[in-house]
Image (cartoon, rainbow, N blue to C red; front, side, top):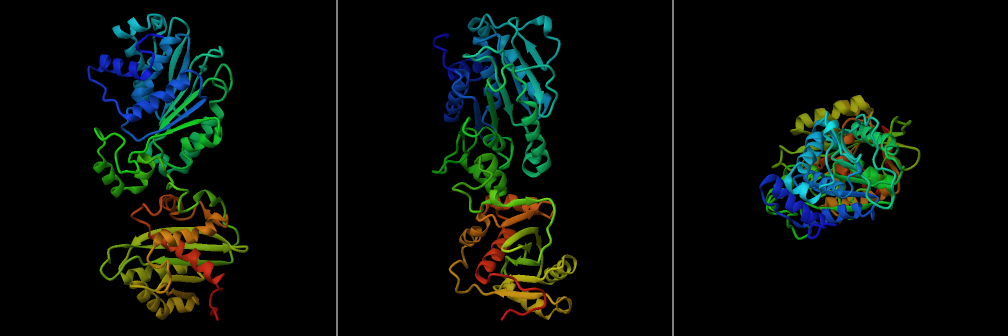
Length: 464
């Protein structure tokens, strides 16, 4: 080792200033990440997962790490992968080649020299000792390259997976996430010279509970180390106040709490076990034959809050005590248009029962529904819930905790092709952090009513 630069963090700081001309402002998260990367280098960790907010210099640190690790072992063979090949080429192979061409690097690691005879492409460089760093995009063709050399006991290369999926596709597209995960499981294991030996480094902001980071945690089980850097700690301090002031991060939380919890807090589901056990909700490709269908409505507004959206959730039942989230949506309505919407939904969806809490405009809606000619002709049951004496009345979190007993038992399912269901599942996963939680309130209203009454009656009958 080259003293005093045996620690990667020392090399990173020194080389960054040499290459960029700017002093690296080191922060606590740099040290945490650097120590984890050193454990990969010394072969103490097989699979390192680093969950970190955007703007943390994670890609920069990874490219400098590869230049450092390959400096000690010029024969090492590594593959870097990110969401797009162009990004990976720019941030990895081109950056590392620039570092290796610097005067300081040549002084530190004179043996690690790029083979200029093979320097025909930007997506790969080879060293004169047979090592290389190759850049590939997510789901891209890896060609004939393989990680590692077959020599055990020392660092001989690594896979680096850096943000394999973009925000909009990672957070909102089940299809894209599943495609990335399948590619990882099928293409990666065979792309090393000793299968299952050379390490993997995954670094990303979290986007969804089943993004690549969540997927590989389950894939590797106990054979992985996870470093999690939260944007805001329990005291309310920012992870890096110099570049990401806490006041700005909290503004992001207010603008989009779902993205804040995932990207900034690395918690696509709420911490503390989550209020809603979304992992216990089974996704259905097809709807089974259901016995009853209930439209649960959260009018979500007083007379002074007429611009707030109403939350609608259609729940259906099959077998005994099994409930399906069939549709979920929120729209802004005045009372009259809200009534028209309810009638329209009941006409098109074959609803048996309408469930509304009797407070503020909820009571007015119940009264108007009972008088509505179309609803009467459909013989739909109108149930107004009086929660005046309920201890859960004014606490939506407690209402959800109570409803979650049914979720946690595995008796709640979701129809994956239902209107708004994917979006709704994301809202449930961060409840009550979302500012738009009216469908979630309608959902907990349904489950709590079922718990207290035990069943919904068929259309046109009257509960005694």
